[in-house]
Image (cartoon, rainbow, N blue to C red):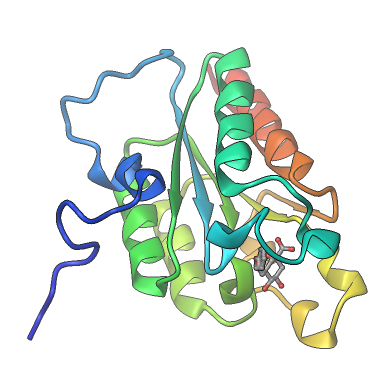
Length: 178
Ligand code: CA2
């Protein structure tokens, strides 16, 4: 049996607040465009486990940081987190023609997902790959990313500030195109 995902009315706040669910009538907001900030598996646990590795900020803090940074540059920021590969692919597809760029921390899918790579390539939006930790100082299997070579920039090891830097970078890119 096919079950719609996410189930209607059962999404947590971060999933409701998503470009994927944005209707055509959604106003442009700040006016210069929208950036999609995507977080992958287990990043919903930020601030609740392994603070020595991932810090004490929560996913809500990360999303607020990204929104504040976007607002300072006249950009809307829409956020989406999922533990499911296909849901992330759907959110990337939904950004086509609506967002001016994508910030993505695909979590462990970074190291495994050709599907997320293909989705980003397909929508032809500038993407910035973010990692809270320095993946190159960690286990060998975290050194390879399916996203790095198709991303405009890669930020790793700056903690959650990486999300701010990524939004600032995309804002600069957008300004140069305006
Ligand atoms: O450093 C990053 O941001 C990572 O993308 C985080 C992923 C990891 O698989 C990547 O190699 C690097 C893991 C996300 C797990 O997030 C948690 C947060 C708090 C507590 C437990 C897990």
